[in-house]
Length: 530
Image 1 (cartoon, rainbow, N blue to C red):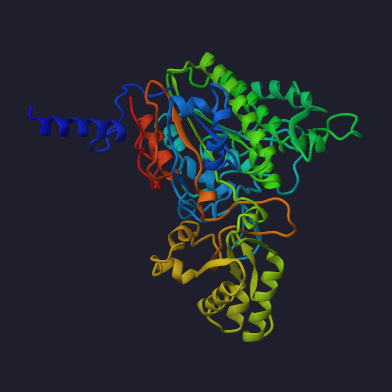
Image 2: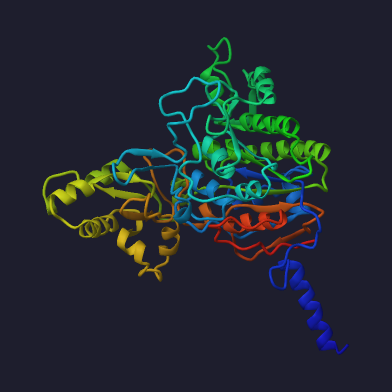
């Protein structure tokens, strides 16, 4: 063989290894995994994963970093990066513009009534004291997931999703999976009547053992303001609602999620049958810690290491029960986190906090001066402002014209980077503007309001000088971990090209040898396949 031809052949072979195909063919491994495990660390930015790398134990995060394929430049493509929207993307591959999950909360565009992303008043939590609007289900999710496709192909497959937050469990479970949620009022795990009328015996056995109670008066060795964090107030004589709720703000509720997952693996025989299963674990504690202290805090750093050790223990148990050659594990996050505005200011960056209520009042007042008395804007709806369409119609005015007025007023507000009207988002005529494409990915015509907006980098809604948040189109919120491990299928490498989190769903579908979800926008990741 001539040297040039030989070199070309070698390059082609390497390209096939790294992309998994010369034409998007299936991985070379002949059999499907018996189990796919997706782990979601709520609110873990990529920068934080890498910053603590030298301190990780041998087989937690390092299982992916040393033995799997992981992407340093994986991003969400939508602008409003919040928990429900991210969790909906992970196994659907569909942006909020398709899934309809534009945020954690929004308003009904027709009535202006507040809506919750997983709201379903026809469903109630099983075995729990239910408040009027406690029922939850995937009713508002407009797309299918990998699990929905898998169960359509073979209903014997099981899809179990577990989280400290209802939205963290429900969105990845899709329409045909089963979601279990940590109940902050009782320390138990419960599903809703959307999925079943009564819990399986293994769930009742787990709850009856009261595993959350073992953390009563326990302390987390991570320190805030120099003091250990204690769970259970000194005046509490026994575990109660306040104690159970406090467990979410640290590593203990995450430990309970993993314990419940162990019970699910045994109770449902996940990964131990002739058909493949999916297990989703969303660990919520990191989001609470980062909201209160930021990803740059010592407490958040310690919490990252706590998760690392919890994962190592879980992986060892998973290896024992399912076998390391029988499952694929993936790890990601639903969003990142911005540094506190005060931290950004200390580094010489423009930053600040915006009081949302006064901003909305200023816009309504300016509209009254221009158009006459009336409440022209009902309120915030996700990352949009919702117009009072009924009032506008009564005044015989054009909604699109009022929306243009609001856009102009928003752009005069401190900290607002961009704003687009319903007509602009529908028509796409401003696609060349830097934030437009991402903002359009966060906007759904049937769910969203009338003017979509985004804040400037390092700005957030809020007052005071404590805590921080997420929800922007900038790298600190969009760039999150994306890692896969499965020694039978996936090689070990770090990959630096930019990829989308929307690419995870078609990748897992490929391994399971099923079609991608119908509304998936992604493509299979360029992994190093075995």
